Image (cartoon, rainbow, N blue to C red; front, side):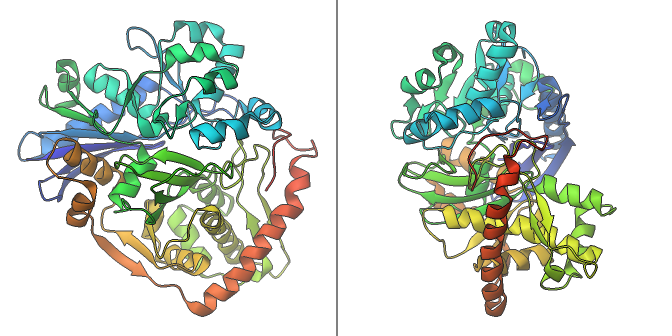
Length: 499
């Protein structure tokens, strides 16, 4: 039996066709636009995202040797994808990296709401989470809230279009309204946020045993899929990617090198002592994902590419590889998002900077410092994680750079593995579908059978020592720059908590 897995990222939708043994038969990709109508805003047209998914799925279905017997869906998380009682969007989706609610988050930080909420949901709140978007819309566009019947995430929106049922996976629901230990909607959290009215917008919660619904005839016509085949609502993309990388047992770790850097470790317990990062249900029974999804990542490398007049991130990596090992003393803080940073520390005012510049530094040294700064963010997240893993699986477009893979190994001091699949999130959704439909008995068996490693990079001991010193310098530089984030002289929001 063939199957299709959909992975709807922030800027690219992927649909992948698989055989029974996990061989990729076809891949369809469609770009999606991120709209920024005002400073700090990040939105998408919901109909446009669905059209991209339907088109990519139709392409893959047409290229398979037989009609697929299952479709599984994963997507970007957080944000607010609002629909009315007829399942129509009530406006553009507010995305996970939207920063318009920074002042609300700062207020919740100062009055203790963030810390108290962390004890219940296990996740540090950020500006792009549903509660922040809903609270902002209630204050600035109350009519839209009144017209809305459900607040979904991207995966829930696609599941709605495929099945006609408004729902949310537990992983997507984990922040900010879920009691993560009880794995149920919290009555306390909407009250804590001062928004009890939001409770009516929360959709049906789907746990590990209730992921499957039949495809509707209307969706079959749009996507080219057979009507009534199982549609599996997989966990959202960071969880699906961990599963696709084979991280399904406690202590295993991976990092997604995408628009966000998401460094994540699988755990079998919920720890709510230190309010940093997020804890979400993994989608594997009795397992959670302790994740640190940064606001810095691929966007920073894209910015560096433009600033240096290069054509692609691959060119940036090639230039960085020519830089001196110490980057001629140039150092970089990678906090370029208008929404600041959310992991492994929270500060909506965080901003990036280049330091240590001199006439001796060339373009190649600046390029190396940019890549190194982003890599330091990965080490920073590992330092905040509950336990240090013995290796780190890396996924995403950045794995195409041999230079960056070796740099990550040296900076983190961990062996780095790269899965054989280009679309690891889609494979994780497919594996979830296999288990949900009974085609595999459990995730450990499914991962052992279907996850393959393409390459392993061992850290260089001498380089690891040097990068240990540089990491401590990175932390000192951040502490030095912190006051400037909050002096009111920049264009970013003021307030918040530094690192």
